[in-house]
Length: 318
Image (cartoon, rainbow, N blue to C red):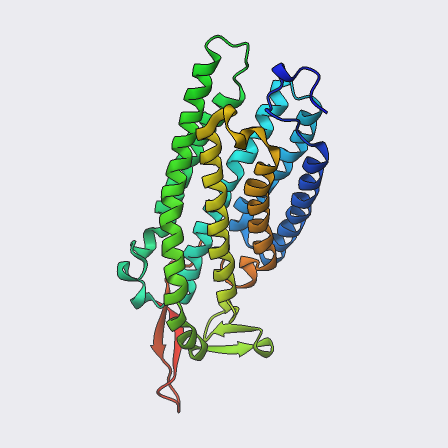
């Protein structure tokens, strides 16, 4: 049933309350699980992802309120902003996880610009910086769009400016994240050569469920490449969502995308939910050590072991 006063509604369709409830509950469940795993594994850097999931929960909770009162500005503005911005934080978490995979898996002497196209030590800082810029630009655009009312003076011009700003932020995100996705996909294949080397340089514990770096407490899951699969799949999903938002803003309120709610749920909500679920199933802290805010100053390298087996090699911190 259409809104009583469709002209004053901030939506170009009748927003669904049941759909918002379902999304709020599903993201809420993943939030509980992610928080539990973060505490259990002491993966404090994953708090960024928890914040992003919390934004999704808040977004859909407020969307329930907004759907019941589509002419109210504040609920509409809040749900619009947090749902738009949450994936940007998720992208930041992915950058950090990729940086940690490289740190723990690739021997120091092979961490080169040739391998990753970008100086390895700058991967996380560079992409996180782009992520912050994209976040701020999209925030400005989202606030401008969501706070503009039809009765405002020069409302159409304000909407256009806000959408252009949001598009610029999305453009920055897609450019940076697109490059990162290519780098991560390429590393997915080149990392094959590190699997065997890592296996014989480490000693198994817990019946092969984990491996320790000899001489240290660094514990690495030998099936760490599963995390790489989750990471690459997440990159594709976030790109799909970002392209959808670009098309949505580019078309404007007269476009078919903004006039049908199911586009948002299929091309934004679903991809982002799958990203969250993938990291619930393949939690980074279950595969990598040192998922705190700081990593050891010294990277993993190789050294010769003494004793009878002079040809054996183990990892050490250098």
